[in-house]
Amino acid sequence: MTTALQFSSLCNRGAVPALNQPQLIYVLTELIPGQAMANVRMPLNFALVLDRSGSMAGEKLRNVKAAVKNIINQLDPSDIVSLITFETRTQLLAQAQPAQDKAALQRLVDKIDDGGGTVMAPAIYEGIRQVSAYYTPDRISRIILLTDGEATDKEDDSRIQADQAGSMGLPIIGMGFGKDWKEDFITELVDRSQLLPPGTRGGNVAFIRKPDEATRVFDEVFQSMHIVAQNVVTNLRMVQGLEARRVWQVAPMIRDISMGTIQGRAVTVQAGDLEQGGAAYLYEIMLPPRPEGQVRIAQTDVTYSIPQAPPERMAADLVLSFTNDPAQYNQYNGRVMNIVEKVQAFKLQTMALSEAEAGNVGSATRKLRAAVTILLNQGDAELAQQMSQEADRLEQSGQISSEGKKTIKLTSRKTVKLSDPENLP
Image (cartoon, rainbow, N blue to C red; front, side, top):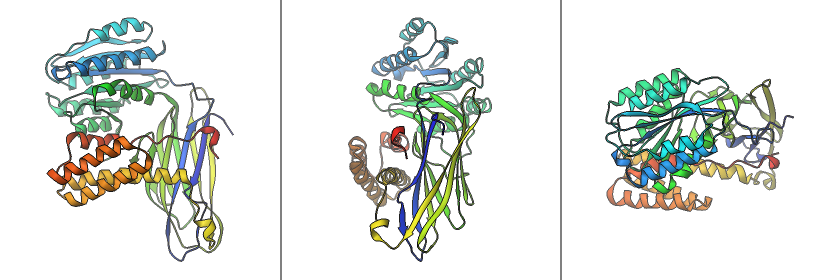
């Protein structure tokens, strides 16, 4: 077996009761770069498109500049970077170039100061122009768009540019700073640039809540561009009688990807690029009634390619025991159940937000408090505290705050830490 990629697929339990009725199980599939990929990434070609409008003045802009300089410091000489700022007008600070003179690029960043409005579309256009100049299949091309407010030009103009980026294979990564930017609009631009169907959320949007978080969040975005494999496709092929109900991506972020992936007894996830941190998927599967015995319920496989190497394929069988022995069927895989709980907390938060917006305050409050309990059990005290405050605010005022909405839509889909490759089965 190749050591380039570690691949595992396991159920939340190794045995289930031999029942006369259907029952639910969970299957977790993890893709984790092995030693051969550990310190390798494809070269980058990206544009930093930065809002420097008047509302960015002071601490925000200082922290953004420090975060950008930190990223520049991490670039390899083979990486291509361009710097674009926007307010009422767009400024090309540094045209696309190899990151060979980092000190010169950082001096340009130091010169950024705050300006006027937030005219966004021309800046996205310039980002497309710069990145397309160096676009090649062996580079990871991205446009990173940062803003802290609402666009003061026509939103449709930015939508047109996002569509153009998508048609050229140049995904946008969105970054929102503070509480006054429109997360749904920025998310829409991101999804349009990824050619996702309307209503499908890619979720490649980062949220900087406070100025002192800028360097950390920028670094997370930078790490997300560290791609180690491409054309990644995972398949789950089930035996007759099984039914996949939902499919969740759980790393690098939590999101429902059921639409378009479930096709009868097969579940196919077109993952595309694989980040250095790996990826994981959680399947909710209904088992039919079965008598006692051990059964192969499915096979999972992954295909992928890495630069200058032939495509690879790996496969694993999923075997499950149907038994009447409680000592066997009462044993659960703690790791899988931990991830199931994370997904449940995310579902509760997103349902609470939908119900709050529909005016169902009581039900929304109960769901938020249930999410808080799970988050506390998971050890996520910071998010639990914020959701608890939002539940109190919702109960008192009937509304979730702007920051709370952004947290639920973006921060609550926290990355699930993947297993150590050495500990994979």
